[in-house]
Image (cartoon, rainbow, N blue to C red):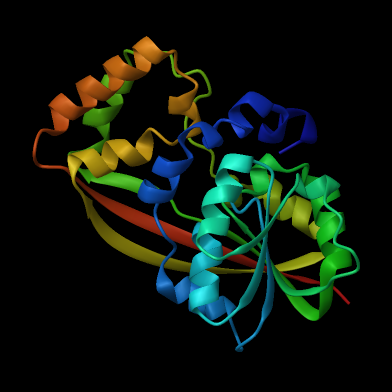
Length: 250
């Protein structure tokens, strides 16, 4: 994706999550265990979690045996991450001072699209120890029951201000950029079948930046219509989780 079209330029959208920080931490999906344990190749692995939010991936990486430092710009998100015992520094990654520290793994867990891409990849290269890696993680949650189309029909009545949720890990532009910046890539995938109660589904989707961009009245109406449609059955969904593992060409 050309920098002139990159989501990081929409700062209102990028900075919207702190307003729902507690719900974000409660409802956003965790990453499949296999993807996380596959990254932590040894006890004490030094990991930098960039754009860490409330520390969802940081906590999982710590539980797998890594020593994690998180970087997150939003104070409200930082407070929740710190409350979990995560070591976290408040800063926008591109402006953050690593103070000479190096890492065995740098992780962007559904956050890379909020960074200035080329600048961030150059900075990552300077942070990696020999034989270290970069990992870009994403969860893609797709409803299967009720059918996605039935939910799309409800959304059609609303002018979603930012379009669909962003999943920048699955674009050819990203792979082109990684190659241009000197990285080789390997993809690892894991699929989960999930079930959400109606409240949990609504709690999750209303932490998405396109939902947060709605005017309050529209947001309330959309939530009401979705809740009425889902009733007590909730949502069965599929998570196509992806890890793009990158290494610098030597």
